[in-house]
Length: 322
Image 1 (tube, rainbow, N blue to C red):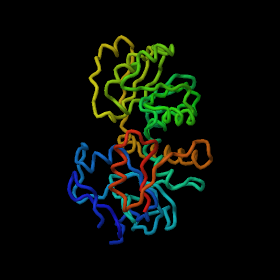
Image 2: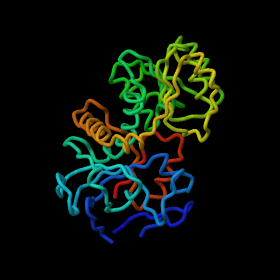
Image 3: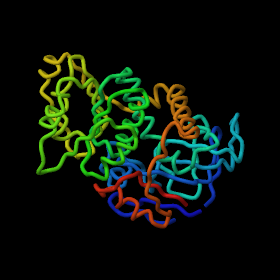
Image 4: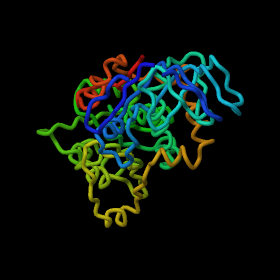
């Protein structure tokens, strides 16, 4: 079996036996594995959870079931499925817990499914479970051209929200407009500050929900722009900096700072999370959601795929297809 293996943190994956399922497991022939921000941290040993080595990266997996273990019910060989787990995807075959796999409907591409799985489930959990988004509310999406950002733009728009999308280039602005953004805000190092642009747009103080996968300097400016009772959803820190927010702002705004940990959603509310992911896949299949953009690499190009994760100009998910 061909696979990419991390033998030491900080070293590139190396290429390395068909797997056999234990009780309650299935074996997948991997058709697509998407990589995200966390994967880049894991292979460098910088993530909060460090896997035992050797480690096969890639946890956002689509594939076809080729073998089932004892006790598995309702899953047969030949089934197309997706699964989210802690690694194993950069290989020709992967083992997964049967209870975690999600059936893929006809009409959704395996690459789209892999790319959508975590980002769209995160955006769904953020907006509709943690953020309690209502139709007609105004949503500010930071890092709107990233994976979670694009998902948030499209899902919020589908619920008739007014979506303000923060991007860093005209190409990215064009993409989020395609996904349903109402207006875009282009942030450049030498350009107007976020708060100034929100004031110029007459939306400062009228934003109901912020989706923030970025952190850094923009977080406080965004929080200050919330309406009374607004919700700031903390998804991650792609900027590399964790902001220090003055807590008096929450008091003055009667606003909420809300953590969005999709791993908790999946772990503590697995039935609801799997149902939500399945419903999202169906929306892609019936064309009510646009396909996810991705940049494709082969398994032999795993090192280049990880390098692509660091490209700030990248527009689309990084996908590895054996």
